Amino acid sequence: MTDSPTLPAVNREWHLASRPVGWPKPEDFALVEAEVPTPGEGQVLVRNLYVSVDPYMRGRMSAAKSYVAPFELGKVMQGGAVGEVVVSNADGIEAGDHVLHFFGWREYAALDAKNAVKVDPEAAPLSTYLGVLGMTGLTAYAGLLRTAAFKEGDSVFVSGAAGAVGSQVGQIARLKGASRVIGSAGSDEKVKLLVEEYGFDAAFNYKSGPVSEQLREAAPDGIDVYFDNVGGDHLEAAIGSLNRDGRIAICGMISVYNNTEPAPGPKNLARLIQTRGRIEGFLVGDHYDLQPQFVQEVGPWVRDGRLKYRETVVEGIENNLEAFLGVLRGDNIGKMVVKL
Image 1 (cartoon, rainbow, N blue to C red):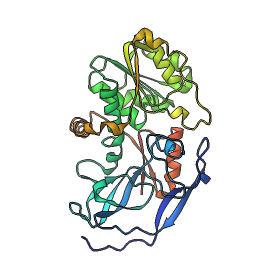
Image 2 (cartoon, rainbow, N blue to C red; image 1 turned 90 degrees about the vertical axis):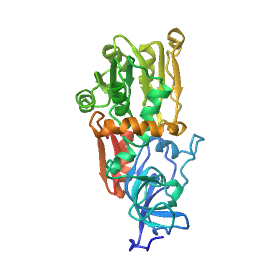
Image 3 (cartoon, helix red, strand yellow; image 1 turned 120 degrees about the vertical axis):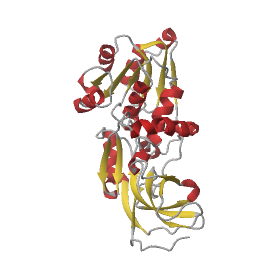
Image 4 (cartoon, one colour; image 1 turned 180 degrees about the vertical axis):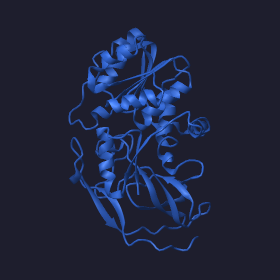
């Protein structure tokens, strides 16, 4: 046990005030001042240094049944965070240690020590444990290599390719011997980034014309793997360009997250019969057994610069909501994190 340090009088935290309909609005949320929690036996108190905002959080704001419980109204929301332990009532974790946990959207969090994973700030910047070496990185790794069964020589198309997951998918595919890597993004700046910094063979701005036409131009010989972060017209275009025995891994469908009516599915699903294609959705939570392999393989790529990453950093817990809305708008390049 450690002596209690001097703590601030209040702990600012974000609550869900009402369930958004369509695009989330500021009035659906509340920045609340609460007491700094006192950790119990077997718990630690963490001062969050970086918190994550991710597209999947939009789903948790709805009461609809999903793969994860919805956020509770009037209660603090959750998300990935990394911070410094200021009080420890648990064996194996000491004050001053840095930990990764799932109690973000707040300045201070008290949690069971079993739910905290120690991380080394000397091995990599703390923010990377929320992105390139964290859940988003593992999502890219598992989705490409296990769900999409990527193999050397495959031609790979990634939508939302300038985001935290998509940019890593394309680079892993390149490092693993893809014959061609194509990405879509929402601005000319992001397209340039994909080609010039991340090493994609081709990229296009999906706002510049029909996705199907731009994909056929970028991949005249078709694609073997599609990693889907967007859904909608991107999924339909990918099915249209899919080669024999092609595989599609569905990671997310950000284009429909704020729809109030069900979005129509691709009109060309019958083409999967011709191509013997396969579509499979996945959740990173089903693939945590790959974590050691992921860190062992990807960690050196990050350290020696073979795998590059970008972060969009927003300062201050008061801007947590705006950072999240920015992710939904596509404002970020790479992983969006909030620095507290």
